[in-house]
Length: 251
Image (tube, rainbow, N blue to C red; front, side, top):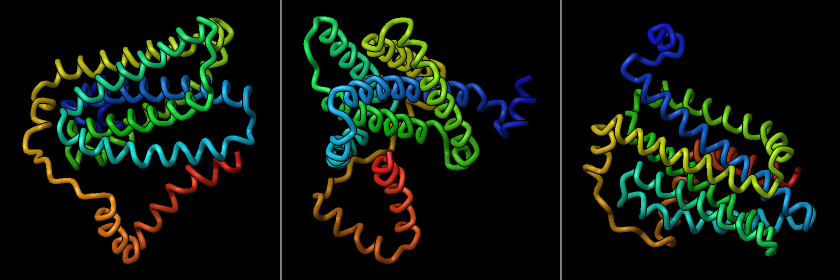
């Protein structure tokens, strides 16, 4: 069965377990992100309406820009699996803590939740692909990364379709505790991967040299000539802007 599965998906027999665990991890991350996203956006729209969404998009974009700059230094210093497991626990516990505040009848600022869910989604995605980059080499990534992404897509689909049923069963405020459950399960999966594939994970931090970080101004000086000369970079920037700027405005 495993040979047939591997032949159909072009995943070799010694890669199947690693692929399945990685796809399961991305499935959990994406489904938890969708659940939190549905709760945060519903709470925001019910309280403020759509007219404040452009401001939230601007704040999210600026926050992401600076947070990604800070995270770059952290990624270079900590092993990927440890960083992701810590982040999953932090995300789940903070959101569940906010859920407890809701149950105590305190009002949580809905814009804050909307900003928090955007930052958590970006950080978990970044940490996951940082880990995947350590687990798979370049040749493997060309074959396996699209399949792993399919696991994330399934997590998004099931999370979206499952949200209405969860709301009917446990009420919308309790979605924050569902988020805690999925993120903690993801942390357990990461730790389990560390047990099953110790040779891969133990080698991930070796050979990494922490280079002196350039200032943001110097980074722009390095990037701007590349943008001017490369048509590919311009296309990639356009592809990034379309879903993150144009589509939210249309929504």
